[in-house]
Image (cartoon, rainbow, N blue to C red):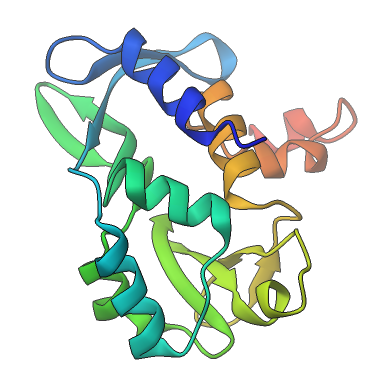
Length: 178
């Protein structure tokens, strides 16, 4: 059972009329964020991307594209100015534009924390469910998730880098804070 659209619908129900949401941040901070959704992609558009790139997209990602052909979640707003941050999931056109910016077998599907959120197409080809990676120009870090779990956890954590949480313990957290 896929729940990615239910997670996104639930988030949408919490948004203000202009996509705004109050985000509770770390250490008692809060700020305003913006979420926005494009129109859905058509099946023939998704098939065209797959054919052009010789790939087969994971089912949960296809469902997301059918829901919205590009999404921005938890973009930070300060003094009524969108200063970025958050997660940007690319439209089909943006995927094509960014495809050459990461090495094979990674397909960039979004931008997150100054790096690409990417699908490892070899994992998908070999039916490995944990296909999502955070890719810089130097390395690809496995997130050990598929897109559906990533989006759900990203919404629950209100845009926090939840995948980094295990790094910070009571022994070292306050050292990073200095």
